Image (cartoon, rainbow, N blue to C red):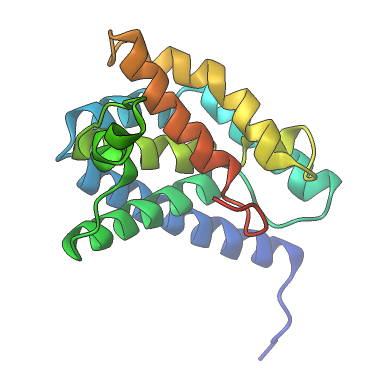
Length: 190
């Protein structure tokens, strides 16, 4: 019995694992966002969008091929997104309100009211934050969270404008997403 795998066998094993992880994560995202129309519209737009897949492919290429890190492409982004959405639902079940839901309450005493959103907005924020959080790796691993934030703006404009006709509300949602992207690294305080 040969216990050492050939390069071809390793590649085939990885492709099988990757396909399974991708399928599981996409099914999880599908299942969760099916209850939230705004989040579902964004997911349907971005999941196979050619520009978005190019962002994931370039982030993966630079991180893995050029810098020797682990995978940071579409599979990574979708696994992170699926797990983040699961965590959001666990927090909701435990009675924790997302910031977007309690924003007006938190800012009303300060005089500069930031309007609240609903649970659909919260799921959309987590969805986009997860999908976009590592696209900055295509620039460089160092400060990739900042690069991700900058690169995410045009993608957000593309998908948020049809959903939020009110510019102020769209700006608030975008701000929450950018904050999530920027603070996803453990050494950045949120």
